[in-house]
Image 1 (tube, rainbow, N blue to C red):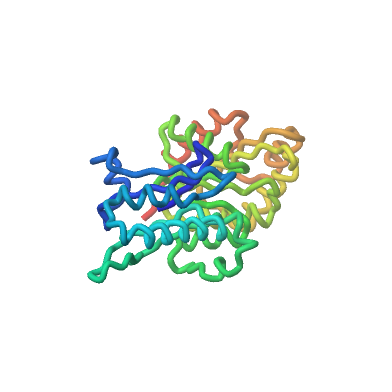
Image 2 (image 1 turned 135 degrees about the vertical axis):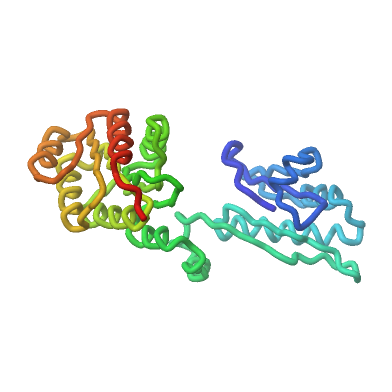
Length: 282
């Protein structure tokens, strides 16, 4: 299989003689048996690297050339289709000494699908979490988790830090939801609907750092969204950045039961406390 090694910033080809097994399982039991070839981006996958993998798999000389063609073809597909993974499992030798890929799985870079319409049209939303599919339609990054505290954050890094602080305060996040830089009222409302579609959610934390945006715009969006969506669980909002004083005033003057917080640690503690006093959903 071919994977993107983000640490090395290289494509890495990994192989093992035993097909039909998960590579993670093999890595734990016999890591020394895994074959690896690192592809230099300046020159791409070379035929000699594919041959080394083929010989390492214990194939007969007559089958090496076929295997080289398969590996190089998989590499071209990886590069030309903006893939993040190409997995051939199993690769078999038939009774008449032919090399065949019986099953292939591919993952693609979502950010590159705008230039790969032939790949994008194959997307099967029935195989995805319907909430994640809906999030994509609104330009949101949403991943469902196992906790009961809904998170609405702008920026992936801030979202990760927020989830860490929730765990540190004794809670568990119900989702990773990044609303991005343009926190418009419509996008914020869509985010609230997504979070509340999870029946496990017992409290929501909104944590927004306004850089490109302004806190007063974000606060207006939150107030409008809360009124439209009718949030029925405790809501903690922490704002920071441009026009933060105006944003906090808008939340205070809204008359809505919004719990304000000045710092991330305070926000995490308040949302965990609010969730403890919320009835467990049936």
